[in-house]
Image (cartoon, rainbow, N blue to C red; front, side, top):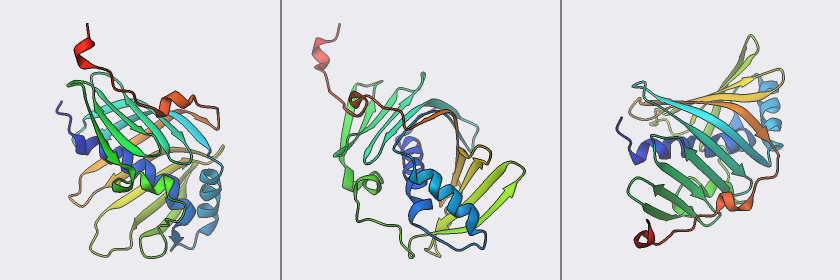
Length: 208
């Protein structure tokens, strides 16, 4: 399986979006009770730990664990054979390719991670539209898209209703590529160790 950097940024971008869209986007759907319910769910998240499975449009799958500490800190660990680690420490997004022992630092303001740390930023009425919400048995489906009419991106979130819990999201990008992420063993608002959101490089020449 070929691993590309874009593939991993897709999951990061998707996850950052799901934390803020329901809180800040203007809903263009009549079923506002579902929007309110899911918004309150996100509002109450201070920390999150969850295992995930990620599948792309070609059937390639990856798995791992994601940690979130609001505001502004995140860690995504991929299981082997993938050798990628993403750490957001509040200042930088650090993309670590463990296969070649290389860490790339990006200013958080140049990445989607800025949406977690900038208290003045908002999707607002000109960026994201929640255009539909419905139920399907015990599931709640929330649909979102950019307000930009030229954009073909679509995002779908799936919640289990009783008890309310985020289960899955799917994004279709401009090129109609899709990535589906399923969460399981979700833990909310437990204390997370601060070291999870720190990355310390070691001297490669000291490796055994």
